[in-house]
Image 1 (cartoon, rainbow, N blue to C red):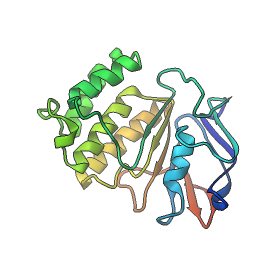
Image 2 (image 1 turned 120 degrees about the vertical axis):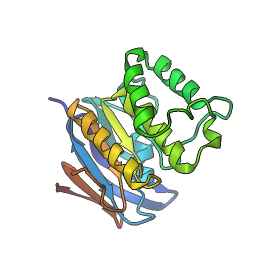
Image 3 (image 1 turned 180 degrees about the horizontal axis):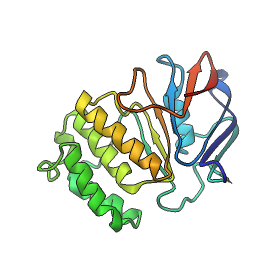
Image 4 (image 1 turned 30 degrees about the vertical axis):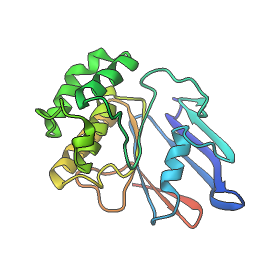
Length: 215
């Protein structure tokens, strides 16, 4: 079986200043990996490269066995990414964002799961409001609802537990475990212990290098 996400000798820098080099790891379908490291180590930059938002200077990213760049056309449901600060359309309500994501991904069958996620994350009754009226934690919850409803093959989450209270963090961990059980490969970054979730793989980014270890 091909790896869901495979990274080979990835390097990135700004001008002549390298951020990290020689980054390599592989994530199988259904595996959960934690990415840790100090502030400024380049974790968010790595996520943006993996999502195709930034182009690495060297190396290769493969999704489901095929080369991937920001110019690659992906089938709906292949890859989803929640950055450290999710952004939304100013003129759409939360439920309109959900309708847009379901339509764009041809995923109307995911509607019951999306509605259940809205309830689990405490957004039921507030879905007709624009995300601009939400707190930071509520905006994070909405972004998570949008991607978790889709059950993508690869899911990238940059500090998803950070803005959440403990109850919502436990809900998120349960939903990540459920997605992994369904075959989603999940990479998430964190600074602290994640309640209710044990990784299959631990990655630490520091001093320009990535160290890969087991759970």
